[in-house]
Image (tube, rainbow, N blue to C red):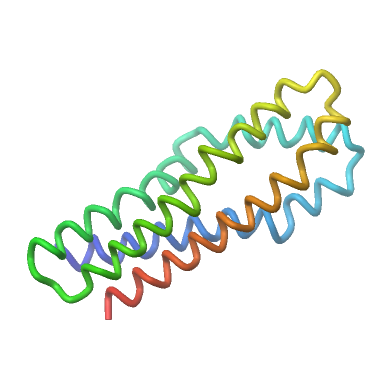
Length: 150
C-alpha cells in the first residue's frame, strides 16, 4: 500500500506542476492576445472554474498525499521518508502557500476590479510571476518525491 501512496504522491505533484506550467507557458500568453477587458473576464471565469473538484483534488492531493507518505515512511523507517517530507515542504510553501497568500488575493482583486481592462493590466504581470514560482515549486516537489521512490 505504501508504494501506491508514494506513486500517487509523485503523480499528484506532477499534475499540479503541469497545471501551473500550462498557465505560465501558454494560457496567460494566449489571454494577452485578447483585449484587456476580455482577458480579465475570461480569467475571472477560469478562476471560478478552478475551485471545482477536477482541480481541487489535484491541488489538495498534492499537499496531503506526500505528507501522509512522509509520515508513513518515517513511522516505518523507510529510506525515502526525508525526500517525501522535503517534497511536502517545497509544495506547501512554494505552491500552496503562494497560491493562498498571493495568487488568490490577486484573483480576488481582478474579480472586484471596477474596470476589467485596467484590472487585467495590473493583474497579469504579478500573477504570472508568482505562477512561475508555483510551477517550479511543484515540479521540484515532484522530483523530490520521485527520488523518494528510488
